[in-house]
Image (cartoon, rainbow, N blue to C red):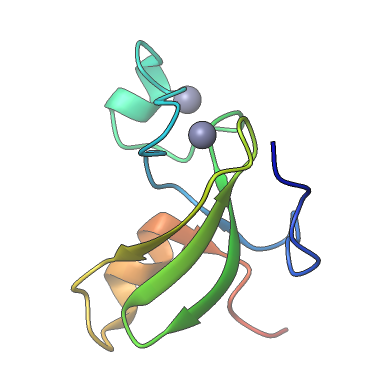
Length: 85
Ligand SMILES: [Zn+2]
Ligand SMILES: [Zn+2]
């Protein structure tokens, strides 16, 4: 297992399935596409529509292409904590 990335911050979360451990399989909230309190990933960084994520369960790090471009609404559905107060 990798250590948690220094950029990992519980205030920046993304709801994307982990390609390594699939920990949200069978979770009703995740299957409904809702923001589950258990199965979120650390959002390490993002460049354009590409997210760099780390799984809480298995510490796997990967890049996820959202294809969302610059529009705000889909971003806010899968991530939180990006907006500054
Ligand atoms: Zn995982
Ligand atoms: Zn879940």
